[in-house]
Amino acid sequence: MGLRKKLLAVTLGIAGIFSIAACSGNKESVIYYSYATGSARSAITQVADELGYLKEEGVTLKYVNIGFTEAFAALKKNSSELDILSTGFPQHLSAIARGDDLRIIAGTASEGGAIFTSTAKYDTFKDYNNYHNIKVGMKADEQAWIIGRQYLKENYPNLDLSTIEVKIYDTPLLAAQAAAKGEIDVAFISDGAMASYEANISGLKLVNWTGELVPNYVCCRETTTPKKIEEKRDAFVKLQKARIRAWEYIENIDNRDDVLTKVAHFTGQTKEFVNNYLFKTASKLSADPNKKGIIQYYNSAAEIGFFGDADLSKVHIENNIDTTIYKEALDQLIKANPNSEYLKGKLALYKEQNL
Image 1 (cartoon, helix red, strand yellow):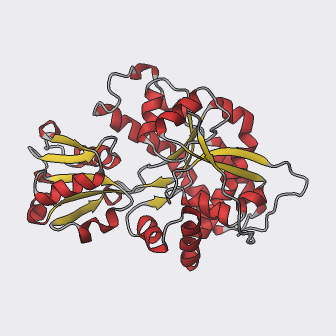
Image 2: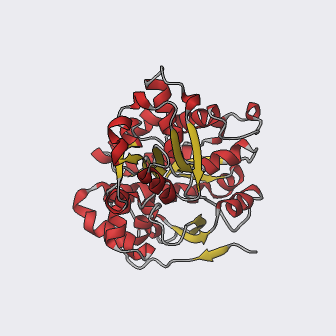
Image 3: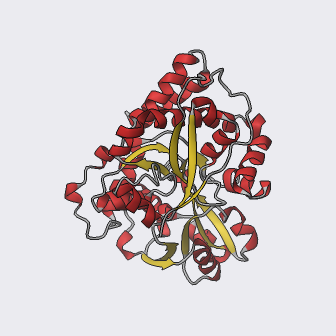
């Protein structure tokens, strides 16, 4: 069955944050870019599209609604039907562990997980010293658990983590409901709807956002292949330039309402949904690749056997990360805008997280 493609037309041509416009003679660059219908996870790219930044930089995205299995199959054979997988992350690492020759090139979001327990057990489990001989629940591939477990290991060395029993649920919501009922002790959850969990699930209480424990831990990344980079590097740089510009627009609080309007328009969701998804959880939008964070996450996942029987002796995760595309985009923007304090800050962040 062929991949289903959905092309969304740019409807607004609003002047960019920077005084940059694509030269009229530039040839349009086309990128086939994954997008889950209705999802606000790729909000940086969505805002770049809605503001006209992609058009100004000379790039057009053709949005492909595709599942992870199809996406990795397409990337593995370097299909013309997909260039960049823009969401997910544990799945990307699993594909790399299986031997897929992939390259992580930029960020989509960071953080976003949470730890929940029941109201009755809150006083016990707000103290992480009590996380032994307990039952925890989550969906498969749960990032909050991988990050949370690593935090417990590093900060509570007296805990015997092998005594923790893990139960897998089909959805994050089911794990949260099980915690509220006391069927499990703690739920580790990464889900855009969880901002409303505590209010709408009787007896459920938030212990911590996982990002409060491990700030800026990696979540969704943009992933492609070496061949795609060879063929479309210039287009990928243009994409990252537009995304960095949109990132600045999003992070300016004065633009909040317009951001909500644009993401709601792109996704077909309500502004309330988008606000809850993007700004009422600990999830953060981030275009920076965060190479150090990827390596840390990979090592933590490998330690708990996340990759099953994959032969990890053949995997050197640092070789599957290409930060040069993002850096080239950032350098071009800085050259055009040398006095931008925002861009200087993103350069400092790049050096902190990637070098």
